[in-house]
Length: 154
Image (cartoon, one colour):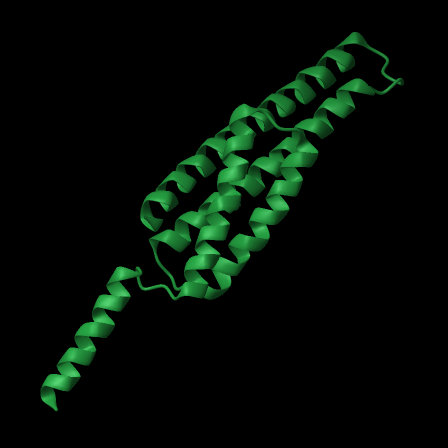
């Protein structure tokens, strides 16, 4: 009887180690999340517009939310969540940059001095530049998280 329990424990341990401790449903969720994040990673590396980025983000967010829901805590889950969070921040920064650019395209007509005009464009230009820089940094951070998650998922 003792040998039977030992054998059973050994089989369970080997099964857990060989599949990384994830059930097939959890592993599928991880794979789908990682695949959708890699699509965003590829798209941002070659160029993508705001609307297409948003569509990819919706898909990746849904798949990563499933990981958040069913996968136990650990480094792999943390990297996937950090990646989607970074892509979401990038999208928000993209929107901020577009808003600043739109304001610059439609300046106020009631300014009375050149100083007001220069100050407006300096502020909006800096805000737009900051948002674009932040978006790029968010994309780079997300890409690093995707790479780490890929290695952990192997």
